[in-house]
Length: 65
Image (cartoon, rainbow, N blue to C red; front, side, top):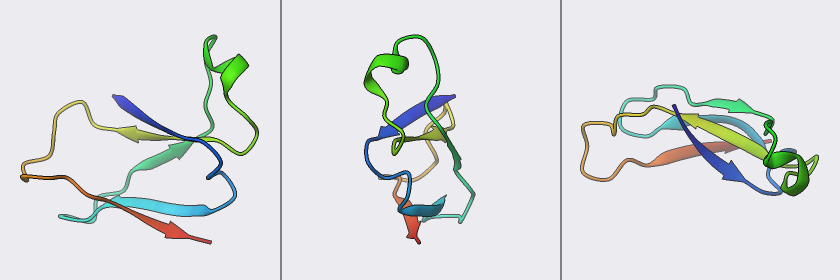
C-alpha cells in the first residue's frame, strides 16, 4: 500500500474517500522509524492502494470535522 503523509491535518479530517467510486481511504497515525523524528501529533497518513484507480486523475475527497 502507498501512503500520503498530511502534516497538520490530524484534528481536521474526519473521513477520506475516492471521488470516482466513494471507496474509503484509511486514515492512520504515522508510524515507523523514520517518521518518529518528522511526524507530529497532528499528522496523519492516508493509506492508498498500490494500483492506480481506473480513472484519468484520481481525486481524494476529504470530509472535515
